[in-house]
Image 1 (spheres, rainbow, N blue to C red):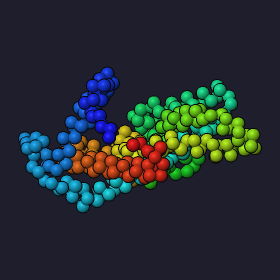
Image 2: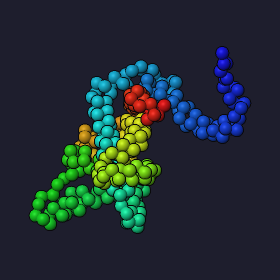
Image 3: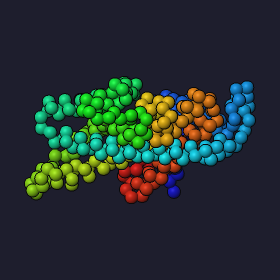
Image 4: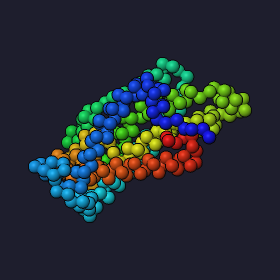
Length: 307
């Protein structure tokens, strides 16, 4: 029987490799694992005099309040629904644009288009808020100014929650499609030309080559990006929602997510216990989701799973 070699043997054998990875392990330990002690806040009514472990222990009272108030359901619904929409529309648009660019023959126009589409990724959310405000402001916004010039009534978009369901998705896709497209474009570039040449010889047209070769080859990349996105599905896009919605309470029911709720809980009421309980629920939900999806993918095709 072959005896398994332990961790100390591997450590002694690969000292240099463990030494190289040590800074990364220390970084994540200090910044990701040590702060997890703060989870205890979720089960207390925080008191500055008592500190972390001196505050009154209230058990699941904070979670019970979130559940009974109905806030937790609304926040979970909005966070999950928006992130699913972001994943679907962003990846669909990025794949479509990547395929179009890959079929272009003009190198200059191809590089120019790719650069123009990538540019919004570097625009800050503060500037994005300014763009949205100048477009949709009721009195002086571009949209309402145009409607008035056509003799139509202006639209009060900042007081219409349903409008922001589409606008938030549109702005998110517009800002991130260039970055995601580059990932898919790199995958397409790595596909062997032999597949396309063989398909052309067999009489396949451009649409058939895309459908039977390009799209199937993009499947592993899509699954990896999907798993990464699902892992943070409960984190939302705080910068996007906070900058575009801000403190507009009229839009909260349709646009409020867990991140913005936690931020307001700390900023307005400084309720650390309530904010931590919402954040803990957010983390547990995301962990269970990513483990479940990874298990299902691993069961169907082990090569596509993360672990």
